[in-house]
Image (cartoon, rainbow, N blue to C red; front, side, top):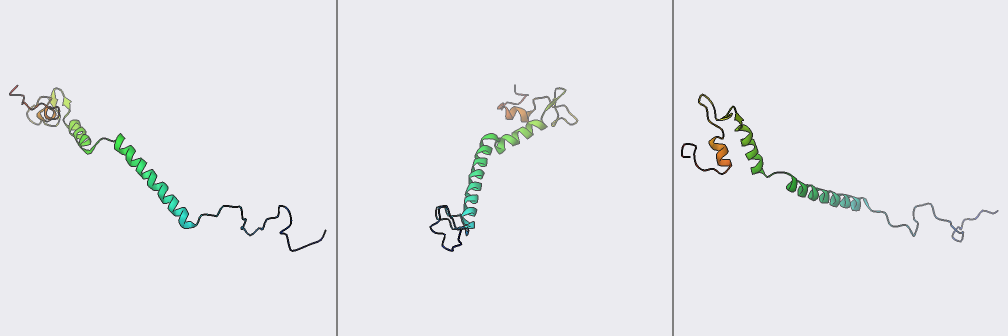
Length: 106
């Protein structure tokens, strides 16, 4: 065997300096960051779409809170009843249910 400096003709020889001609070019840090940003934007869009479908609107949430306050306890409205007994459903619950007549008018 003999040592030589010109390996260009040797079969299967590749330079070990990372400059393989058939290797795809490596992405720059900027390109990797841009790809990551695009991926995050896509994930945020998907999350927003899921939230718009799965969560109730602000009005629905507010109505649920009002209904939780104006619940029935022993035939009276737990929120409206103080010294006097306000029968359940109270005017608030009747209004939420679409009843516009007062209990006295009915």
